[in-house]
Image 1 (cartoon, rainbow, N blue to C red):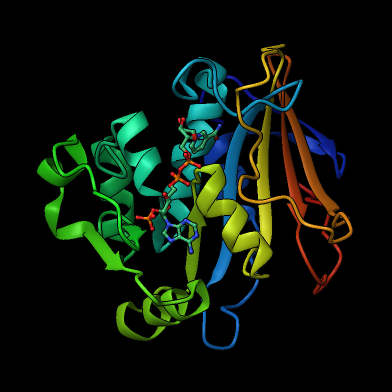
Image 2 (image 1 turned 180 degrees about the vertical axis):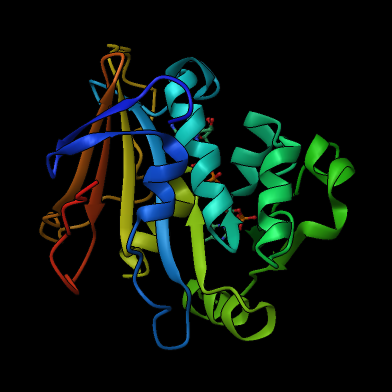
Length: 243
Ligand SMILES: NC(=O)c1ccc[n+]([C@@H]2O[C@H](COP(=O)([O-])OP(=O)(O)OC[C@H]3O[C@@H](n4cnc5c(N)ncnc54)[C@H](OP(=O)(O)O)[C@@H]3O)[C@@H](O)[C@H]2O)c1
């Protein structure tokens, strides 16, 4: 096992590490005409997605290990332009060993970093564009609905698994369009307060009923909870690891 273990709370099972946990995930098949879509967020116990301008203070070592292990697993990562700017995105997999593992498995060394904008500026001065320019895709989403954006990723770029890292505006739009299959939510043991900090779902309020989620998994490490939810229709119940 690598590093400090994560305790498996649900389904009950042996301790795990980030790499093993994400390798064992039974992700769904690509949907008709689009990738299978995961989202990953961290919030405080009071549901805030930022402290000040970004999420850095919510995310400790355990969260970062899982964050990078999820990236290592997927074909592409979708990030809103405002998140790219606020968090000063770097290349998807800064650790050479992660890139090497993917290469050894016959995959591109890093997932494709994708952003979509309909009008606004993309922060091209961030390290991401300098470090791995051939693994960045900027999609012009003007007049293009998000399901068509996802269809392009599936058809033209071979993306079968897509990880959305937010922010709340882009994630909210994806969710309202019914394009999210799973949510990985890290709950940091912290209260942030303040009315201005966003939750993980942004965008306009609607009269739609709240969506009920199915809990697929829960881990704990150093007081931080790592929850995995099914969003939308369930394909199959979660399985319990046995080793
Ligand atoms: N806690 C966490 O895990 C977490 C994760 C990510 C981000 N964050 C925080 O969230 C903040 C940034 O999030 P944000 O919500 O302001 O911005 P965002 O979701 O990163 O980006 C929003 C932009 O996405 C573009 N977009 C493209 N297609 C869209 C569509 N169909 N619908 C809606 N937007 C679309 C829009 O730009 P155009 O108008 O140009 O189309 C919009 O302004 C930062 O403070 C960041 O630190 C926290």
